[in-house]
Each structure stands twice: as structure tokens, then as C-alpha cells.
Amino acid sequence: MERVAVGKVNLGLSLLGRRPDGYHELHTLFAALSFGDRLLLEPIPEGIQFRGRYGRRNLAYRAAEAYLEAAGWPGGVRIVLEKALPEGAGLGGGSSDAAQVLLALKELYPKELDLEALALSLGADVPFFLRGGVAEGRGVGERLRPLALPPLPVVVFAPGVRLPTPRVYGEVKPHDFAPELPVEEIVRALERGEEPLYWNSLEGPAFRLHPELKEVKARLKALGLRGVLLSGSGSAFFGLAEDEAHAERAARALRYHGFARAGWLGGGYGSLGGLAGAKTGASS
Ligand SMILES: C[C@@](CO)(OP(=O)(O)O)[C@H](O)COP(=O)(O)OP(=O)(O)OC[C@H]1O[C@@H](n2ccc(N)nc2=O)[C@H](O)[C@@H]1O
Ligand SMILES: Nc1ncnc2c1ncn2[C@@H]1O[C@H](COP(=O)(O)OP(=O)(O)O)[C@@H](O)[C@H]1O
Image (cartoon, rainbow, N blue to C red; front, top):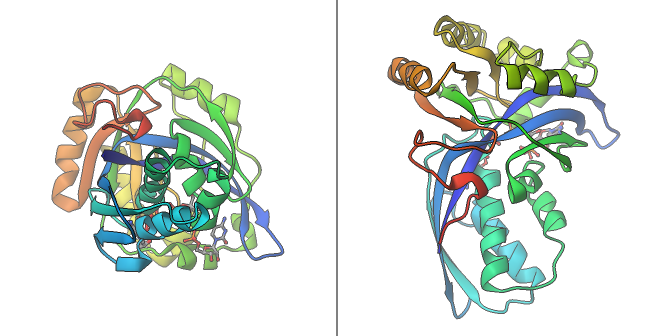
């Protein structure tokens, strides 16, 4: 069985405060991308055979282990992971890989399990990828409310600057905290093609760690993209394009400087991105 693990961007991310357990309470809008990694999975009599980086520490491997352990090892699985999304860029590739492994194993070895809880045990972004689409996220991103958005042409650019999530959260200062996102206004602006009034509270910490990222953001804006923002903890940025042709043009201009890709947000996918039908992340 073949599955596509699409990436995500955060259409705004607000840090509301710090919890007693050290984690940060956030308010965000997750939006799935139309492109991502490819996973091949097939049942084997027992154990986990995995081809991909990081071996047993890979989130895809850990997801398989978590599901099969919880299901009482009804059989095994062979997994081949072909990465297309840049890692540690705030695009959620590892989390999406994990979610697709959970969903695939549920098909291969059906069992009444709390998939959301298994997902959350693997990472805060994993529950979102079980459904994909667009969703408002609270808590650490696990309390989700699905939202509807028209398909939006988008450009994603990752400059190759390493920005590990713990380092960015470690750089957060009290003045980075912000109020809740104005979700209704953001959705309305996105529907009308206006500049959305969102922000990412992690942009300040990321800019302090790597000031050159400000120039990356300016480069995307100079290409006429709207709503240019850091995704998650970075270092990928995204921007909204006028149409497919604009998105393709901008991605082509950025490709010289790093990973650049045109695609769609919001659940409707055209020819762009080459992964039509990737909305649910599944194919067979
Ligand atoms: C920033 C976001 C936004 O969607 O995504 P990415 O940029 O990773 O895609 C997430 O909050 C990434 O959450 P998650 O995937 O759990 O981060 P991890 O790498 O597991 O967490 C690394 C460290 O960051 C801190 N952390 C993480 C999440 C959070 N809400 N508050 C925190 O303070 C914790 O110190 C944690 O130990
Ligand atoms: N399947 C995987 N894909 C990507 N990264 C993985 C995977 N498994 C483990 N990792 C580790 O998790 C880190 C974060 O991965 P990723 O989900 O791509 O980025 P982010 O959390 O920034 O959205 C990587 O730097 C890598 O060390």
C-alpha cells in the first residue's frame, strides 16, 4: 500500500503562555499542503522492517511500534519511507509520516484503539495529520476543530537554516506571548484574497537566533506573495500566491536559494504539485 504524508503550514501561531509542564499553550491554524513524503507499507508475518533515515528513532518506525504494541502484535510491517519534505523545517514531515503509518496499520490490522492518543504520544502535530485539511488547534495543537477554506495557491520555501524546535521554544521570552488569533477575520481575509492578519509568535525567537531569516521573509514578499510567515518553528516560510502561475513563478525564482515548492492549501487540489488526490494523504 502506498500513502502520501503531506506537509503542513501554520496559518498563524500564537503562544498564549507557558504551562507548568514547561510546554507552551498555543493557538494555531494548521493547513495541510498538497505535497509530501511517500510511504510504502506491506504486511509481513512479524516485526518491523524499515528503510529510511534514523532507523528505530524515525517517527514512522516509532509509530509502527506504538500501533503494533498497542494492538498486541497481530503481525508485522515493512515500511519504505521516501522523504520529499525538508526535515526540521516546521512543515511537520515527521509527524505526518507517523500519522500515515498509524492510519495504514489501522487498515492492515484493524483494532479498536485510541488513535488520537497514540498520535499525541508521538508528537504534538501528529493528531492533526490523522485528518489533515484545515483545523484550528489549541493546547499543544492536539485540541482540534476542523475549518473550511477554499483552495489557496501557496509557495513554501525552506532556506536550509537548521532551527531545531527545542532551541526556538527555548528562546521564547515573555514579550513573545500574544492573544488568541482572530480566526474568523483570518478565514474571511483568506476567502477574499486579502492580506490575512495573522502572526507567528515563534518568528521573533527565530529571527533572534538567525537574523538572516528576515531577509528570507523579505525575499518572498518581494515576489508579490501575501501573508508571508514562518511555518511552525521554521525555518521554512510560506506565502500565498495570486494563482497557480504566480505560485509556480515564485517557486522557480526561489529554487536557486533552497527548497522551494508550489502547491495548494485548504483542501482543494488542482494539477499543481503533481499529487492530485493527496488531500487525505491516502492512495492504494
Ligand atoms: C512548532 C510546532 C507548531 O505546529 O510545529 P513544528 O515547527 O515542529 O512543525 C509544534 O508546536 C512543535 O511541537 P512538537 O512537535 O511537539 O515539538 P517537539 O519537537 O516534540 O518539542 C521539542 C521541545 O519544544 C518545546 N515545546 C514544544 C511544543 C510546545 N507546544 N511547547 C514547547 O515548549 C518543549 O521544550 C519540547 O521538549
Ligand atoms: N520521519 C521523519 N521525518 C523527518 N524527521 C524525522 C523523522 N523521524 C524523526 N525525525 C526527526 O524529527 C525532527 C523534526 O522533523 P520534522 O517533522 O520534519 O520537522 P518539524 O518538527 O520542524 O516540522 C528532524 O530533525 C529529525 O531529527
